[in-house]
Length: 326
Length: 266
Image (cartoon, rainbow over all chains, first blue to last red; front, side, top):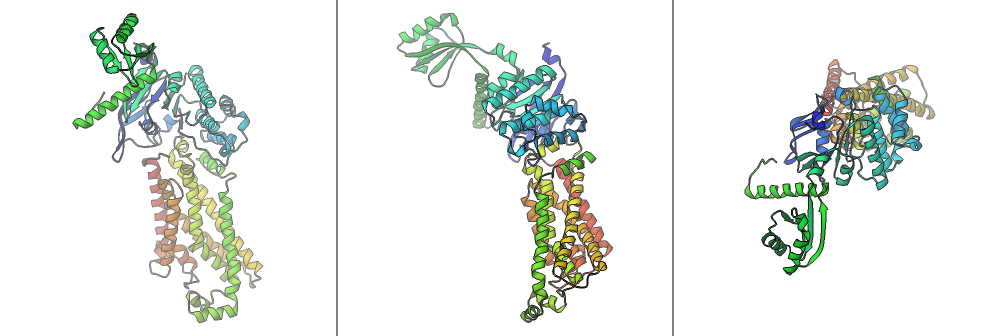
C-alpha cells in the first residue's frame, strides 16, 4: 500500500452536489484528502472549485451529499472543526478602517488566543512587518493576500483551505505565497487544500491533484503517479496530418499515435525508429517542419482529460443520455 | 460572547459611520432650530391658519407655541416618525451588512464561534448605538431650545421627554432585527434601507388610525404624538409592547435562521 493511502483521511466529500436552480455547479463529488498532503484542486474557471470549497466551509449548503473534515460533518456552527481549520476564500475581506495589526489581533482575540507571540510569528512568516500600522484598506493585492493568509494561520490550524490564493498576484507575490505553502507543508506537516486554475502553480506545490470539470471530479491522482504515467512521445509537425497518419500506420505499422492541433502528430511507440519514421514521411512527399521527442506534463494531462470530458458531454448531449460517470 | 462583543466594538474604530449618524441627529436638531421660530411667529401662525393646510390644525392646537415641552416633543417626533427610523435602519444595515459588502463575511462565518453569538454581539452594539443617538437627540434638542431662548424651562418637561425618548428608542429597536435580516439576506445596504423607507411611510400613513398602537413602526408616533396632523401623545396599551417584543423575536429568529441555514456566498 502506498504511504499516502495509509494516512488518515482528513477531508472527505461524499456525493457532494450543489445546484443553483437549473445550474448544476457541483455534481456527486467524492474526494479524499489525507493528512499531510498538499492537494491541488484543479479546474477551469466555473468548474465548481469555489462552490466546493464554500460547501467544505459550510458557507453554502449542499443540495445533496456532505463534507467531513477531521471526522466532523461540516455545517454552520461546526465549531470543533473550525478550530482546526484555517481558510481563505478568493479575495480576502478585511475591516479597512483597522490597521493590519488590529485586523490580526482581532482575529487572535476572537479565537481566544492569549499569546501575542502568535501574532509576531504569522507577521514574520507572511512578511507583513513593515505594514503593521498601515490601514488594511490601503494594502496592495499581494499584501491583502498575505494578510488573509496570516489571519488563516494565526491559530496554527491542522488544515489550510485556500481558494485561488495566487489570484491577482504579480509573479513575485506568487513565488512568495508558494514559498510559504511549501514551508507550512514541510515544516509543520500541514494539510493544504488548494484550488487553482493555474496548472504550473499546482504542479510546483501539490503532492496530489484532483481535477474537476463542469462540477464533476474527473480524476484524483498523486503527482508521482502522474509522472510515472506521463508518456514520452515523438512529435512530428507536418504539412498534412491525415496523410502522415496513413503513412505511419500503413508503411511503418504504427498504431499508437494521436493527431493534435496545428499539424502536430504524436507517436507513442517506436522511439528507436525515429529516423526511419521521419524518412518514411519525407519519402511520401510530406513536409516535416519539426520533429522532437517530448514528455506529457500536467498541462497536457489536464487538457486531455477536460477536453475528453467535453467531447463525451457533447456526445451525451447528442444522444440525449444523462447521468454519466467516469 | 464577550470576545465577540469586544470585536464588534473594535470594528467601529476609525469607522466614519458613528460620526455620520451623529451628524444626522445634529442636522435634525438644527432643522428644528431653524423651523420652530418661524412656526412660532404669531404672524406666520395667522398665515398658516388662513391657508388651512396640514399645519393649520397644529397651529390652532397650539403645537408650536414656544414652550420647552412643545419644542422637545417636536424633536422627539422627528426621531419617532422620520429620521430615527431611517438612521437606525442605516446603522443596522451597516452593522449587519458591512461584512457582506466588504467581503469579510466568509471570515466571520468560518470562525470557531457559534454564529448566533455574532448576531447577539451585533444586536448589543446596535442597542448601545441607537440609545446613544436617542440621548444625543435629546441633548441637541435641549441645546437648540435653550439657544432659541424659549422660556419656562422645567426639569419635569426634560425628564418626561427623556422617558418618552427611551420608550420610543426601545420601540424602534424592537423593529431593527427585521432590518438586519434584510441586510443579511440582501448582503448589503440597499434592501434594509428600502425596507426602512417603506415602513417609515407605512407608519406615518397609519398615524391617526385605530391600528396606530399596534403597528410597530407607528407605536413611537402614537406614544409621542404627531403635531403636524395633529395627533396628541397617547399612552401605549400593554398589547402594544407585546406586539413590539413579538416583532423583535420574529426578526431575531429570522436573522438566526438566515445566518445558519441560507447560503452565504459572500
